[in-house]
Amino acid sequence: MHPTHPSSDSSDEFTFAFMKPIIGITIGDYNGIGPEVIMKTLDDPRMLDFCTPVIFGSTRLMSYHKKVLENEGFNYTRCRSLQEAREKQINVFNCWEEELNIKIGEGTTDSGRYALIALTQAADALASGHIHALVTAPIGKAAVRQNDPSFLGQTEFFMQKAGASEALMMLTHEDLHVALVTGHKALRDVPAAITSGLILSKLQLLHNSLRKDFLISHPRIAVLSLNPHVGEQGAMGDEETTHIIPAIEEARNKSILAFGPFAADGFFGVQGYKEYDGVLAMYHDQGLAPFKALAFNEGVNFTAGLPFVRTSPDHGTGFGIAGKNMASPDSTRQAIFAAVRIVSNRATFGEMHANPLKRSEARVEGEG
Image 1 (tube, rainbow, N blue to C red):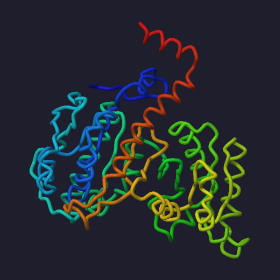
Image 2 (image 1 turned 90 degrees about the horizontal axis):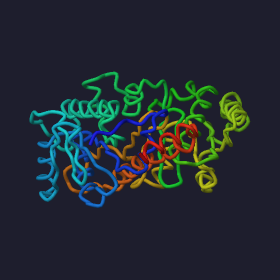
Image 3 (image 1 turned 90 degrees about the vertical axis):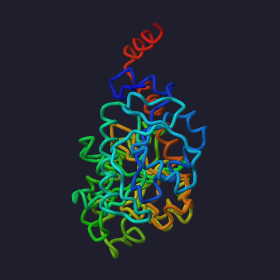
C-alpha cells in the first residue's frame, strides 16, 4: 500500500473519501502513557475498519509495554518499509533497532531523543506520501529539549517541517472548535504578541479550516477578549479597542463572520460557544481550560493550516499513571477518528471546489 500524498491540484485527492486511509501514530515519550493508550485504542478490532494504522516506534518497545500492561494478546506486524503496511493489521515501523533504557514514569534524555526520532521519521513519511495523516502521542517537551534546545512543541515542529510561516492550534470535540491566537507562549509575553495582524491571520486560518476540514460552509466565529470584562472601556487594558475590534472589523470586510470580543468567563459560563462554529481565544489557558473542562477525555488537538493532517490527544504524557494500566484511550481514539474524517473532508472539499473540467476528466479516467 503506497498512497499518493494529496495536493490541491491533484485528482488523487478525489479518491480519499472512498479509501481506507493509512494513519501514522507516533509513540510519544515511551516512559509515559503513549504506548498504553495506543495499544488500548487499537485493541478494538473495529478500528481497523476505519484505517490502516502504522505505529512509529519499535517492535521491541511494544513488546516491553505489552508485558508491563499484561496485554500479551495485543498483536501487530512489523513492516520493514512503509510500502509494506498491510490492511487489517496493526503495523509497527521500526524507527530504531537498539534496545532502550526505559524508566517508566520519568521523562529522560533518551526518551526525549527517541520521541524526536519518531516524530522526524513520521514527518518524512507524511512529506513523501507514505501515510495520509498523523496522530502524535504526547511527548515531554523538557526531555526533547535536552536533545534539541530549539524545540518548542509538536505544533511548531510540524509547522517547520511543512515550511509554513504559521499554523493554528485548535482543540475540537463534536461541534466545539477552540483555536488560539498565541500558543506555547509565557503569559507575560502574550499582551505584546497580540496585534490586529496576528488576530486577523488566525481568523483567516480558522475560517478556512472550518470550511475545508469540517465542511462548515459559512462558519460563525466568536472572538474572546484579552482582558477581564472586555477591558472595561480601557480601565483594564486597551488591547480590545486597539487590536481585537479592528481585526474583527477587517475580518468581516473579508466576508469572515467574526463576532465579539466576548469576555471569556461569561461566554463559557452561559454556553455561548453553542451559538458559534468556532471560538478564537487569545492565549493558551484561556481557550484550553474551558475546553478541557467540557471535553477532556474526548478532545482532540488539531494543527490547522498545514498541507497535511496532524492530530493528537488533548492530554499530556501522564507520567504519574504510566505503566499502571490506568490511562484512558478515549482521546487517542477520537484523534484517529478526527484524522480519518478530516482527510475525507478535505477530499470532499477539493472535489466540491475543483475546476469542473478537471473534475469531469478525473471521473472519466476513474470510469475507464
